[in-house]
Image 1 (tube, rainbow, N blue to C red):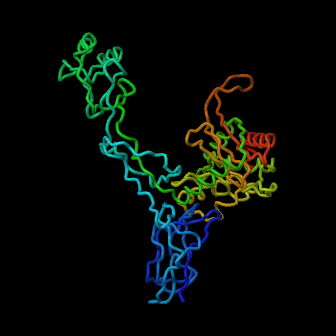
Image 2: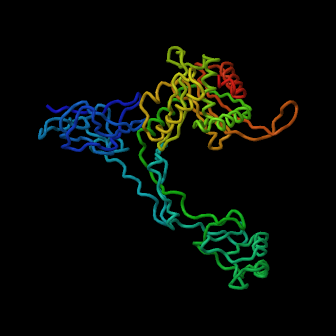
Length: 464
């Protein structure tokens, strides 16, 4: 009798999996331990292992289909053996909701409407759309889209045409046209090679009838006279794309977190100069050993030490009480194609700055490749979200359940600060703590931020 391979539960929040591709095909010999397929969960892409030996006699789920947990994927048995798919395990089509027999799913979006036709309403667009499916060329890149008509002569600011139709106009004439609020594209040039000169602008200002009629397809006005011409056409096609398992799970969990967890926020500003100075010294001195510490490495280490000083923040709400964790498993948010994932530095309170750095880099790399194992992204007790490398000065993050807090880290800003009674140039960093008020009160959150600030402003303490 054939052995049926079913969709396993590969993460704690997984309900369906996407069969990315088969590594074996029907008729192939299979040994126990062989990898059969790649499965995308709500967290990562993982390989599906066979626990049976024999021949892959039947594949029930096509590559790209979504399959519920427990549904049949394939059958392994003897060559020539016949087997039918269990009736209740038909795989779902990617991204389409289940329908009753008399219902039909809505047709997929077909891109932007033709020129002159109204665009479809977007009120039913899913809130979560995957970057993978959204990477499409804008029609503007291929000459599509209808440019906006220009304003009239007495109305808006003067405008410019696109680079391939650049207007021949002298700088003085352009300045004068701006002052007179005359669209230079409606002027007839009398200078060399049809160049618009000062006399043409003055003539049009005295007699507006000399202006040409605006073209219906004139390019969109530029916001700044003499600046880069504004591009025309839509910024992207109007479309609806199905959510991946990861994006759908992120949407569901963040909605639950934001609506069910009573968030409050605390913010503190830290002097970043000592941290940046010691980081530069360490990286320069240990460059030959391959050491390259990031600011985030210091943040992760400081967060673990701050949890040691204020352990009550290292806790979770259970529904009936508070669970206090004895180990600081510090996770950090990594942006990936379909959303984000939070790899975990386990027992970060027991590890040195260099150990944390050596763990964080490969974890971040595997996260971007969707190669994390479940134990590498689950079980965190505190989370750090750092957007400093993207230039964001401050923001508030949504708590990642079951954690009771998450730290949002902003970029380092150079600005005037007061030191020893003098105004000097300093470098500061804003840290925002989002707290679950069921577990963390204001005073407790403030104690944690004070401890974190102290550690970051005395970074030598992080080296012991």
